[in-house]
Length: 218
Ligand code: 5GP
Image (cartoon, rainbow, N blue to C red; front, side, top):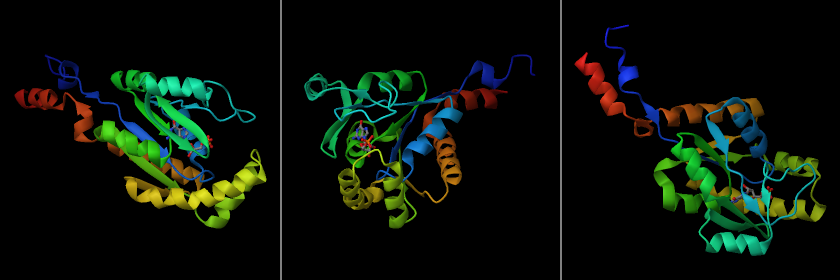
Protein backbone atom coordinates (compact mmCIF):
# COMPACT_ATOMS: atom_id res chain seq x y z
CA UNK A 1 0.00 0.00 0.00
CA UNK A 2 1.24 3.51 -0.74
CA UNK A 3 2.53 5.59 2.15
CA UNK A 4 -0.42 7.88 2.34
CA UNK A 5 -2.95 5.04 2.24
CA UNK A 6 -5.26 4.13 -0.61
CA UNK A 7 -7.71 6.50 -2.20
CA UNK A 8 -10.38 4.24 -0.72
CA UNK A 9 -9.30 5.06 2.85
CA UNK A 10 -9.06 8.78 2.35
CA UNK A 11 -12.05 9.32 0.08
CA UNK A 12 -14.58 6.60 0.86
CA UNK A 13 -17.33 5.93 -1.64
CA UNK A 14 -20.66 5.62 0.12
CA UNK A 15 -23.81 4.38 -1.48
CA UNK A 16 -27.08 6.21 -1.77
CA UNK A 17 -29.85 3.75 -0.85
CA UNK A 18 -32.31 2.73 -3.54
CA UNK A 19 -35.97 1.75 -3.42
CA UNK A 20 -36.57 -1.60 -5.11
CA UNK A 21 -40.23 -2.08 -5.97
CA UNK A 22 -41.50 -5.54 -6.86
CA UNK A 23 -45.00 -5.62 -8.30
CA UNK A 24 -47.00 -8.44 -9.87
CA UNK A 25 -50.44 -9.93 -9.89
CA UNK A 26 -50.87 -12.20 -6.85
CA UNK A 27 -49.65 -15.71 -7.63
CA UNK A 28 -46.72 -14.69 -9.84
CA UNK A 29 -44.17 -15.67 -7.17
CA UNK A 30 -43.27 -12.24 -5.85
CA UNK A 31 -43.26 -13.17 -2.13
CA UNK A 32 -40.93 -16.13 -2.71
CA UNK A 33 -38.54 -13.94 -4.68
CA UNK A 34 -38.62 -11.18 -2.02
CA UNK A 35 -37.89 -13.67 0.73
CA UNK A 36 -34.88 -15.12 -1.11
CA UNK A 37 -33.45 -11.65 -1.75
CA UNK A 38 -33.89 -10.55 1.87
CA UNK A 39 -32.29 -13.73 3.23
CA UNK A 40 -29.19 -13.46 1.08
CA UNK A 41 -28.59 -9.70 1.03
CA UNK A 42 -28.03 -7.86 4.30
CA UNK A 43 -27.93 -4.44 2.62
CA UNK A 44 -31.63 -4.47 1.80
CA UNK A 45 -34.53 -4.23 4.25
CA UNK A 46 -38.20 -4.98 3.67
CA UNK A 47 -40.72 -2.20 3.96
CA UNK A 48 -43.50 -3.58 6.15
CA UNK A 49 -46.82 -2.12 5.04
CA UNK A 50 -49.89 -1.36 7.09
CA UNK A 51 -53.11 -2.99 5.95
CA UNK A 52 -56.74 -3.13 6.96
CA UNK A 53 -57.18 -6.65 5.60
CA UNK A 54 -57.56 -9.53 8.06
CA UNK A 55 -54.47 -11.53 8.94
CA UNK A 56 -54.10 -14.81 7.03
CA UNK A 57 -53.02 -18.01 8.80
CA UNK A 58 -49.26 -17.99 9.25
CA UNK A 59 -48.89 -14.23 8.90
CA UNK A 60 -47.03 -12.43 11.66
CA UNK A 61 -47.82 -8.93 12.87
CA UNK A 62 -44.87 -6.65 12.18
CA UNK A 63 -43.23 -9.10 9.79
CA UNK A 64 -45.68 -9.53 6.92
CA UNK A 65 -47.80 -6.49 7.73
CA UNK A 66 -48.87 -4.20 10.51
CA UNK A 67 -52.56 -5.07 10.80
CA UNK A 68 -54.58 -1.99 11.67
CA UNK A 69 -58.20 -0.87 11.42
CA UNK A 70 -59.59 1.72 9.03
CA UNK A 71 -59.70 4.46 11.69
CA UNK A 72 -56.01 4.05 12.41
CA UNK A 73 -55.27 3.89 8.68
CA UNK A 74 -57.11 7.17 8.06
CA UNK A 75 -55.23 8.77 10.94
CA UNK A 76 -51.90 7.75 9.41
CA UNK A 77 -52.96 9.18 6.04
CA UNK A 78 -54.05 12.46 7.62
CA UNK A 79 -50.84 12.78 9.62
CA UNK A 80 -48.77 12.23 6.46
CA UNK A 81 -47.22 9.10 7.94
CA UNK A 82 -47.63 7.07 4.76
CA UNK A 83 -45.26 7.41 1.83
CA UNK A 84 -47.96 6.01 -0.45
CA UNK A 85 -51.27 4.27 0.05
CA UNK A 86 -53.91 2.56 -2.06
CA UNK A 87 -57.04 0.49 -1.99
CA UNK A 88 -56.36 -3.01 -3.35
CA UNK A 89 -59.02 -5.76 -3.46
CA UNK A 90 -61.37 -3.84 -1.12
CA UNK A 91 -58.68 -3.39 1.53
CA UNK A 92 -56.40 -0.48 2.27
CA UNK A 93 -52.62 -0.71 2.18
CA UNK A 94 -49.90 1.82 2.87
CA UNK A 95 -46.15 2.21 3.33
CA UNK A 96 -45.06 3.79 6.64
CA UNK A 97 -42.71 6.67 5.87
CA UNK A 98 -40.41 6.61 8.95
CA UNK A 99 -38.67 3.23 8.57
CA UNK A 100 -38.05 3.80 4.84
CA UNK A 101 -36.44 7.19 5.40
CA UNK A 102 -34.30 5.82 8.24
CA UNK A 103 -33.03 2.91 6.12
CA UNK A 104 -32.24 5.12 3.13
CA UNK A 105 -30.36 7.57 5.32
CA UNK A 106 -28.21 4.73 6.61
CA UNK A 107 -27.38 3.87 3.00
CA UNK A 108 -29.47 0.71 3.07
CA UNK A 109 -31.78 -0.27 0.24
CA UNK A 110 -35.47 -0.90 0.79
CA UNK A 111 -37.61 -3.56 -0.89
CA UNK A 112 -41.30 -2.78 -1.48
CA UNK A 113 -44.00 -5.33 -2.29
CA UNK A 114 -46.61 -2.84 -3.47
CA UNK A 115 -49.01 -2.54 -6.39
CA UNK A 116 -48.89 -0.25 -9.44
CA UNK A 117 -50.87 2.49 -7.69
CA UNK A 118 -48.30 2.73 -4.92
CA UNK A 119 -45.47 2.63 -7.44
CA UNK A 120 -46.96 5.59 -9.30
CA UNK A 121 -47.08 7.57 -6.06
CA UNK A 122 -43.44 6.77 -5.25
CA UNK A 123 -42.52 7.99 -8.74
CA UNK A 124 -43.87 11.40 -7.82
CA UNK A 125 -41.88 11.68 -4.60
CA UNK A 126 -38.73 9.64 -5.26
CA UNK A 127 -38.24 8.82 -8.97
CA UNK A 128 -34.44 9.12 -8.73
CA UNK A 129 -34.20 6.47 -6.04
CA UNK A 130 -36.74 4.11 -7.54
CA UNK A 131 -36.01 0.79 -9.27
CA UNK A 132 -39.22 -0.74 -10.58
CA UNK A 133 -39.46 -4.47 -11.29
CA UNK A 134 -42.59 -6.18 -12.58
CA UNK A 135 -42.96 -9.95 -12.26
CA UNK A 136 -45.16 -11.86 -14.68
CA UNK A 137 -46.35 -15.47 -14.42
CA UNK A 138 -45.22 -17.76 -17.27
CA UNK A 139 -48.82 -18.45 -18.39
CA UNK A 140 -52.41 -17.82 -17.34
CA UNK A 141 -52.77 -21.54 -16.66
CA UNK A 142 -49.83 -21.45 -14.24
CA UNK A 143 -51.19 -18.30 -12.59
CA UNK A 144 -54.50 -20.01 -11.93
CA UNK A 145 -52.73 -23.11 -10.62
CA UNK A 146 -50.65 -21.04 -8.19
CA UNK A 147 -53.65 -19.09 -6.96
CA UNK A 148 -55.60 -22.27 -6.38
CA UNK A 149 -52.66 -24.02 -4.70
CA UNK A 150 -52.40 -21.28 -2.14
CA UNK A 151 -55.86 -22.23 -0.81
CA UNK A 152 -55.78 -19.71 2.01
CA UNK A 153 -58.43 -17.62 0.36
CA UNK A 154 -61.96 -18.64 -0.59
CA UNK A 155 -62.86 -19.71 -4.14
CA UNK A 156 -64.61 -16.37 -4.53
CA UNK A 157 -61.47 -14.45 -3.62
CA UNK A 158 -59.39 -16.56 -6.03
CA UNK A 159 -61.83 -15.95 -8.89
CA UNK A 160 -61.83 -12.22 -8.20
CA UNK A 161 -58.01 -12.11 -8.10
CA UNK A 162 -57.81 -14.00 -11.40
CA UNK A 163 -60.06 -11.38 -12.94
CA UNK A 164 -58.04 -8.52 -11.50
CA UNK A 165 -54.71 -10.05 -12.54
CA UNK A 166 -55.44 -9.14 -16.15
CA UNK A 167 -55.84 -5.47 -15.17
CA UNK A 168 -52.75 -5.50 -12.97
CA UNK A 169 -50.61 -6.98 -15.71
CA UNK A 170 -51.47 -4.17 -18.12
CA UNK A 171 -49.26 -1.94 -15.93
CA UNK A 172 -46.02 -3.76 -16.77
CA UNK A 173 -45.18 -0.87 -19.14
CA UNK A 174 -44.70 1.43 -16.13
CA UNK A 175 -41.75 -0.61 -14.82
CA UNK A 176 -38.03 -0.47 -15.61
CA UNK A 177 -37.46 -4.22 -15.52
CA UNK A 178 -39.75 -7.16 -16.31
CA UNK A 179 -39.14 -10.74 -15.21
CA UNK A 180 -41.20 -13.67 -16.46
CA UNK A 181 -41.04 -16.07 -13.52
CA UNK A 182 -40.53 -19.42 -15.27
CA UNK A 183 -38.06 -20.68 -12.72
CA UNK A 184 -37.83 -19.30 -9.19
CA UNK A 185 -34.04 -19.62 -8.82
CA UNK A 186 -33.48 -17.93 -12.15
CA UNK A 187 -35.88 -15.12 -11.22
CA UNK A 188 -34.11 -14.55 -7.89
CA UNK A 189 -30.79 -14.44 -9.74
CA UNK A 190 -32.28 -11.91 -12.15
CA UNK A 191 -33.43 -9.64 -9.32
CA UNK A 192 -29.94 -9.91 -7.78
CA UNK A 193 -28.40 -8.86 -11.10
CA UNK A 194 -30.74 -5.89 -11.29
CA UNK A 195 -29.78 -4.88 -7.74
CA UNK A 196 -26.07 -5.17 -8.51
CA UNK A 197 -26.37 -3.08 -11.68
CA UNK A 198 -28.52 -0.42 -10.08
CA UNK A 199 -26.16 -0.13 -7.10
CA UNK A 200 -23.26 0.50 -9.47
CA UNK A 201 -24.97 3.41 -11.18
CA UNK A 202 -22.82 6.50 -10.97
CA UNK A 203 -25.54 8.60 -9.34
CA UNK A 204 -25.78 6.08 -6.47
CA UNK A 205 -22.07 6.18 -5.61
CA UNK A 206 -21.67 9.16 -3.34
CA UNK A 207 -18.15 10.63 -3.07
CA UNK A 208 -17.00 9.29 -6.42
CA UNK A 209 -15.73 12.73 -7.51
CA UNK A 210 -13.41 13.05 -4.52
CA UNK A 211 -12.31 9.44 -4.90
CA UNK A 212 -11.27 9.95 -8.52
CA UNK A 213 -9.58 13.25 -7.62
CA UNK A 214 -7.57 11.29 -5.06
CA UNK A 215 -6.70 8.65 -7.64
CA UNK A 216 -5.56 11.27 -10.12
CA UNK A 217 -3.49 13.14 -7.54
CA UNK A 218 -1.58 9.89 -6.93
P1 5GP B 1 -51.97 -9.26 -0.17
O1 5GP B 1 -53.24 -8.90 0.49
O2 5GP B 1 -52.10 -10.47 -1.05
O3 5GP B 1 -50.82 -9.39 0.81
O4 5GP B 1 -51.56 -8.05 -1.15
C1 5GP B 1 -52.42 -7.64 -2.15
C2 5GP B 1 -51.74 -6.60 -3.02
O5 5GP B 1 -51.50 -5.41 -2.26
C3 5GP B 1 -50.37 -7.03 -3.55
O6 5GP B 1 -50.34 -6.75 -4.95
C4 5GP B 1 -49.40 -6.16 -2.85
O7 5GP B 1 -48.27 -5.86 -3.66
C5 5GP B 1 -50.22 -4.92 -2.56
N1 5GP B 1 -49.69 -4.16 -1.41
C6 5GP B 1 -49.21 -4.65 -0.25
N2 5GP B 1 -48.80 -3.66 0.56
C7 5GP B 1 -49.01 -2.51 -0.13
C8 5GP B 1 -48.74 -1.12 0.17
O8 5GP B 1 -48.25 -0.74 1.23
N3 5GP B 1 -49.10 -0.24 -0.78
C9 5GP B 1 -49.64 -0.61 -1.98
N4 5GP B 1 -49.94 0.35 -2.86
N5 5GP B 1 -49.89 -1.90 -2.30
C10 5GP B 1 -49.57 -2.83 -1.38
